[in-house]
Image (cartoon, rainbow, N blue to C red; front, top):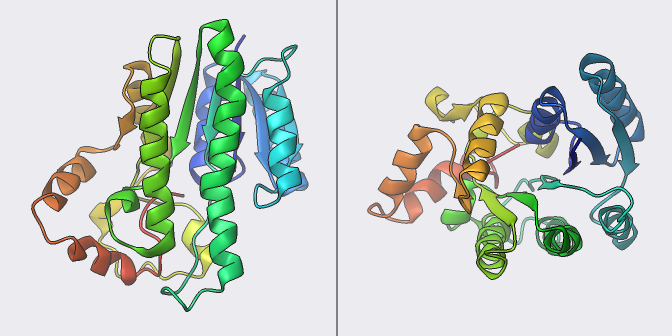
Length: 257
């Protein structure tokens, strides 16, 4: 039986990955900051699907939190076959309205943690000749929209570059770039969503199904849902400020969770 490690597993896209992978028979390592929610999630998934669900409490905005997940990924006695780097957050406000501490915290979670955990996971995967990594980015990666968009653009470029470097090793890497997903993400960040058209909202479970299908096909970039594929095609032709204007009406968040 294979094992998947999911960061930010207790809500949103991370929880959808956990549900789907547990239903498919994968054991899980669930990573988040809230121990109580992790334990409740692990118990529910174990009871419903009969899989083993390990709990790892870690704050990926802290070195100790990243190190604890690195250590688990490097445990050769309990190999991780799939890593889903999903943990992330948004800041409400424009550049210079958000504190520098919060900006740096975002880069820590979205960039440094993704870099370090991807490296920790793929080294033993390469040695075994198999494995996969899904780094959750956002369509914000393709929109000029502050630190959030810039950090997600880094995730896309890093993931595709690493995938190229590891081609032929049996290790697959993919950047997942969803649009607006109905989760608690925006509420946590204090962002309004009333101006976002209904057609732009995606279902997290359907999104995960599409992402896993793209990973199985060997794609290094996944933009789930035909609506967003078409929208991203239009972005290449439209002024770059168009989607930036839409995202500004929902704070600094344009994308997943």
